[in-house]
Image (cartoon, rainbow, N blue to C red):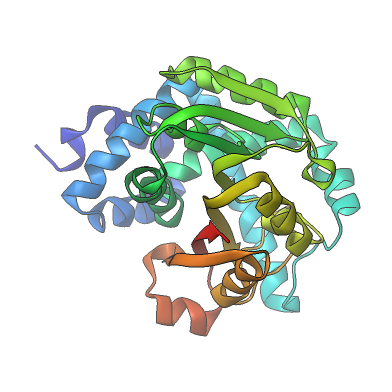
Length: 304
């Protein structure tokens, strides 16, 4: 039995992806070959969660992942030619991406499978689960801003260390999708979902906070981080995840080095506990910096 065949759900999704996107075989085979046995166990658990979210539409999601890959390549070509992202304002992203319901559905579907097939994406989730959640205070009141598909919110809700779990998003539609995903995955405690814009966020105090893949969608990420600091109790923990040199259809703020993210978090009122970088394409960090490849950067901070 091959290493992949030992993980039935992962193997099923792998075969489905190749069925609709055979051009991706070299990439996916390297993905599996470069994964440790321990990482494959984690991917199997993630595959089981994603299969529950996508039940009844997994082939569509696999096709949308193939579509997203081509969209990302177009953005990469633009980035390489011009050294910037295609978009620079939220208004542009709203007009060209967020207001296009068909585009957004395909985009979100594709991103869901990217958490399996892109090593930097899956490693962020695993680090959040293994490391961050194990360090927050017992009984923490936990908030995630911009929960998307709800994978990190699901892990927080199932953590024995969280006392309550809340998710905020500016879009009622996104929150509805998050609720559907949480119900499909099954959570061990109630999750409160509310529509809020963090620019005028309500007062509240939390003990831990997740802000993953949101900074790059904002024109003023520094202001957002300062607002998040005001939502945390002193000593509260924040998990910030943002990509460096990562062109995408709706990315508007370009981080060129991981240190820029670290500096923003520190300036917002946090002591830096940890910085972790996961380069894309299984590249070394040195190579990713030199060639300006995507780096998924995690910054964990303590509110001071």
